[in-house]
Image (cartoon, rainbow, N blue to C red; front, side, top):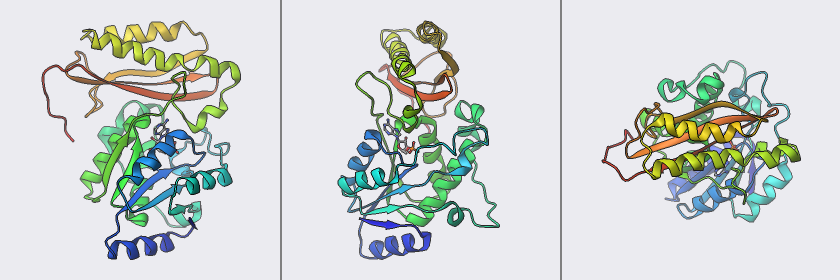
Length: 290
Ligand code: AMP
């Protein structure tokens, strides 16, 4: 496996392979790799001949009060996982090569980024959209894989690729969970043992919402109540937001039709967790906008 730090060297490697007709797959990450990332890497392998994983903790998507400084960076372990999974290139740019003096362009996807994570973390999606656009420009992949765990991020990336004609096929893969249902996340290491025992209530609440909708609850407010009542049973949990939305537009629903996504963010102590589940009811067909 090659470790590449320079964007120019990364592009040269990709361009060389593209000329030979090699299909390049790409999994962008912030490192601290776990089995969720591993699943994306394995899925990518099935669709490409050469595979690039990037590890870059992107300062532009963190607000000043957030956890940029303490974000876990176990680089030796991450490289070992990539080697184990047959990754061809681990692309590890530095902040100064990604954002050199004079850098000023920001990519925004206003409507997808407006609500939910965008409301709680106002600069976050500008940072994400900008870095994904840059990484696609540097790595020049044919396809890129993202996790459903970051549902709004995946929607934003799809929109941006379409709007800017980036020519990258986007594949979104299901959320990988711990046996008790907690979505795997690099931030789970911040949870104390007691908080860790509490955390699975989040997925249980989303699942209770999903089951209620599948049993015929059509009214988004009732689905919300079911989820909120479960979360209220855990005094350590504070809800940041909890939403019942259209999966294509991320606009809140009043009445649930054929599909919905139940998504939310909670805090347990100082740790913020996000998660979501998609519900399909098999009702009347509607064409999503993507
Ligand atoms: P991150 O390193 O957190 O920026 O995540 C990199 C990619 O891995 C993103 O596309 C995430 O959605 C995806 N990812 C993170 N956690 C999981 C998970 N538990 N299951 C599946 N994909 C995940």
